Image (cartoon, rainbow, N blue to C red; front, side, top):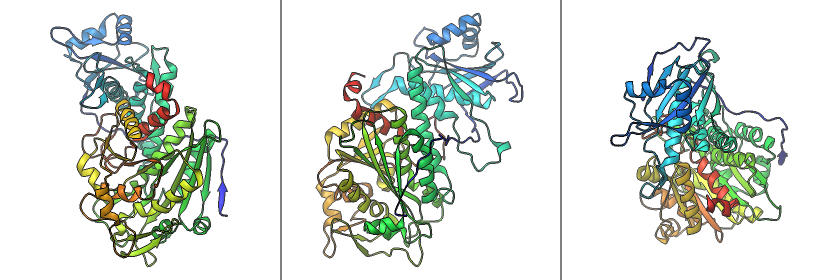
Amino acid sequence: MASLRMTNLLARSLLRYGKVQQISRIQTRLFASADDPRVTKGLVIGVYQKEGDKDPKLTPSGEKFDDRVQGKVTELVKECNITGVLGKGKVFNNIDQEYRSIAVIGLGREGAGFNELEMIDEGMENVRVASGVGARSLQMQGCSEVFVDSMEYPEQAAEGSALAVWRYNDNKQKKNRTLVPKLELYDSPEVDAWTRGLFKAEAQNLARRLSDAPANQMTPTTFAQATVDALCPCGVTVEIRTMEWIEQQHLNSFLTIAKGSCEPPVLLEISYCGTAPEDKPILLLGKGMTFNSGGICLRPASGMEEYRGAMAGAAVVVAAIRAAAALSLPINISAVIPLCENMPSGMACKPGDVVTLINGRTLAIRDTDKAGVVVMADPMLYAQNTYKPRLVVDVATLGLGVVRGLGGGATGIFSNSHYIWKQFQKAGSLTGDRMWRLPLWRYYKKLVTDNTSFDISNDGVGPASSCLAAAILHEFVPCVDWAHLDIRGVGMLTRFGTVPYLLKNRMTGRPTRTLIQFLYQMACPDAAQNK
């Protein structure tokens, strides 16, 4: 069947539970066993850093709780020399009958706001860190229900705590899994903001789950089914296009890479309608290579397992659309996701092969290890012809250059629109998952198009791999505003500088929340400006 529309009226949770890693920053006092049936509820409260001669200051909700326990928290803060340094604190047990474990976590400087040099709202990010460290420490204590102080930013408190306690551990025995505690907002009426934060964190956790699954458990077909399960209950339409349809549409660049694997390729078309159907949509394109071995140009065996995350771009797109639907954003979004594997075989693409794209131009595949732009070429052209979007955003793990240049600090963004770049920059400063603009100059275009026997090469000339990949993709976006997010440094395994509410050596799901915030700003520009 060329096209299969799949809908599911029953929502399924894609969250999975897993093992809790040690948190070196948390010290435990009066430790109670996780087997103790009394240890069920826990509470996270924040404390601002001491300044000068002033003592550390509890948040307003923390002060109310301190009054409830006759000042015991203040006494313990002084006794244990808690200074309020960001992300550092202690867990106290048995000081309240209802909440058996209390995590007092440093929030850093009171009144922190937007830092122009760092390009981040430090007040919001500090709350994510403190709430995440606190919730995870109580999870280690065996708390089944964790109440979180809003710390004056309930949405960010929900994000930090929900991201911190989540684990991907599907392949562990059930008896060895640590259950994720239920999260609740403590002493605040701002339930709507808290719920928005949970929606955004749940979306990023969905992207983490999809990216972290082993390649044999997240094939193109499996990914397609997971997308249906995640999006159809939210009212989003998902079309699953099979090999026959892909061949009929002559998406040759996609098929050239896909034919090297025994796993059949799949192309997903996703539509979310949040406003008038005639309004032009924002088009999202996610690279969905569920495993990238490098093909004939085989990658080194050491570390190859990380490239199960070569479909992180597709995972981020699916997760962002799920959040947009959950938040009922008044905007139309379309997405195209090509799904396949890049494997060596007798059918695999060979270095030097040339394919003709649906726009008539030729693309030479000189390095099969750099198959990402090849897989995305024809689907990107097809999507623009089909949906006539007002804006194109593609998300992909492409060049090592962005890893070497930015590490895990920021997503590399390339755009032909200064307005779109500024919107992404603003979104990243609010979510704490920042963007940094890299050049999209004619200099790089010449390095990928100045060839004698074909129009475009898939590798270009020179070491600027991320800039060259962006220049190639730019050739497929002739006349519309466009942004390319290269997430190879932030969307795969995190090894350095891991933020406290994520996990080292695990897939991150980044930059899902930044893409959601960007979509919100495009959908509600007046509200976003006032905010």
